[in-house]
Length: 315
Image 1 (spheres, rainbow, N blue to C red):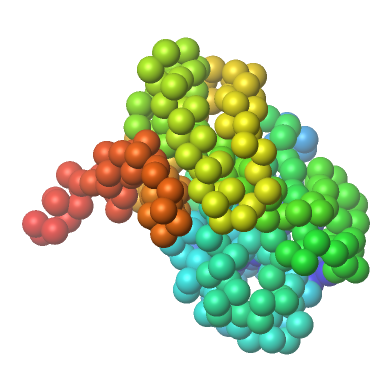
Image 2: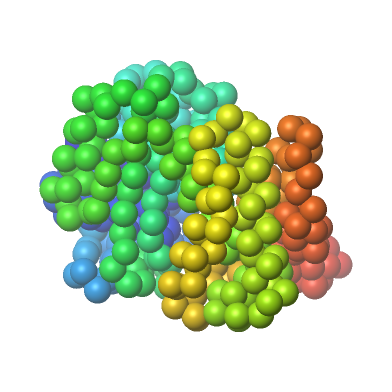
């Protein structure tokens, strides 16, 4: 397959490198220091499942440099989705399938606003991976799974083809018969993990071990379930309890990317996580006091460390 990977970070870099190693024609879109490093020495992916290297020739700085693709994998931060979607229109109109493995439940709504709706597949990913330094992606642990599917719940030829390519690349992958529910199920856990670890500023072991923060974790996830059900998603009413039990199985030191971004003074995906739950709840008439509180508490940090921004503005 001709595959374009927009965003060569932890998700795009890892899965794109695996597909490239299996023989697919993969082109990465990257920027900044990461782009410069890949152009100089290629992309290196370090993983317990084996190290991967991608040629320096496999990266471009702009989507416009890709003239045709069978599949586009979107793996940028959520705030870049709108801009990326506009740039993908010509590829989608040329027949490319577009699948986002970003976080959140609003990503595909944005994509379908700019692209032919039938070009968009739903997708979720499960992996812990990050850019260790420009040109180097590190995969933590052995979990590396993709799940995708058609929104009309059919098992199409393009979905089966992508599944075959993933399996040939050594990627744990599956097809969802209800991809919207699958996306929301991940969202329930993701909002709980990100919101509480960032607000408490501690890993999941501390959050789940204290009665107060454990209750917060459960209620944050319960609000997501209620909002999802109000939107017509077939979530189990008790799914928050299921995810709380899952949280008890996680390594105590595990945290979230939003917590890490907060610690580093980076921009947060807050508006697409707890902020999105509060926003959707308001639209649907569903109370979301815990997610609203988390969104409000973390709001000063949403664009990065306030002290850093104040210093920058003073220059």
